[in-house]
Length: 357
Image (cartoon, rainbow, N blue to C red; front, side, top):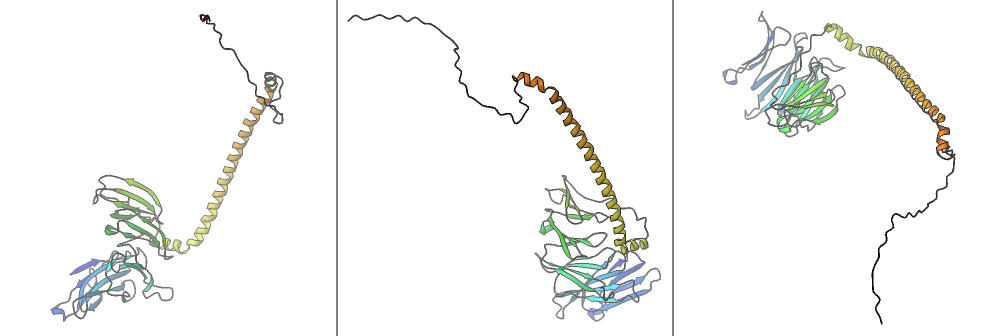
């Protein structure tokens, strides 16, 4: 009924449904090597309603979401069959949620990693659970890391480099965003891009783009965020249809070298932190030298004006009737003087007669 290729190996996963009215079990998963057609592993289950397959990017794990009928055949419940492809005999683990009646909204593997995330429950606030395919004390068993309760999210976007994930609430959630660090199991930032329709990680895992395409008639454009949820820029564009990052060229390092660097990252960090400190000290010294030069120029300028003031001091004193007005300690007496000034005089002859008594 369905099949899916491994992203790294010539292995095809097949789903064969139940036959014979349910008397013959579904060959839920059959892993077949190509071109030899050798069957590497299979798992048979009864009462299967549907299956959906999720490969991890390195082809190390395969998760199969299995919907099964209850005994009454009226309802279904969901579980996961987890295949460890790279291990001997391809062991299989069963992962069931605490409430297997929860609706599975979405599932996502950590790229190049061992963790997986599941959004489950009912809207408007489903839960998000994180699991690991290994733990420090038992590398061969799946373990639950945490469950985030009541999140406004219906989509998961892992960083291509792993570790970080964006919990997104698209469509009915109007663009709710939560940036999480799965290593620390903490939220780094919560934000919103109203009516966001698309989310794209930069291939380096350093930046995230959220976009509102022309599915909506308003607010078209995109935002660029840092991996930890800081808004870096906002671009509005009418009739905006698609956002795509430029592909990153293949790494010049081998996988083995990258693993070695990741393993010894603290040692490298100390080395480069020391180099950064040396550069910082050098820049600080250059800054101090620059400030010194600016200060010396300022002092020369001030001294030049003081010299000019001193040369003109006698002339100013003569203009001020001998008053040493440059001296701040000189005391002055302020008097108010009223002056009357005759502006104009006019004469007018007025004739009049004396009355006799």
